[in-house]
Length: 92
Image 1 (cartoon, rainbow, N blue to C red):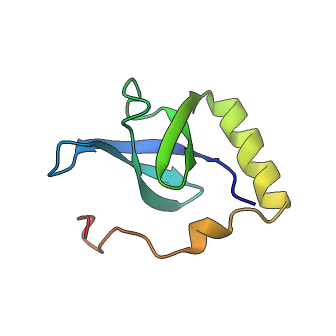
Image 2: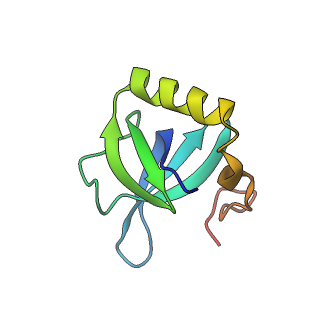
């Protein structure tokens, strides 16, 4: 089952193709997510991410509750997949 996972936006940038992107922290794991569906998102906001796309903005309490429930249900496996981040923080 694929679920949207909440995370905190730690960086917002535009990729070389002009697409609004973010680096999102999911409990210590940072991955990139597309912000094209949520252009109002800023650094410090919490978002629900599904297959690399931020689908909606959520408040911090809701993000924390959801993350803890997903963790309890062992549904955070997609965070174990290799990141698109290089060691220097540059995208590949």
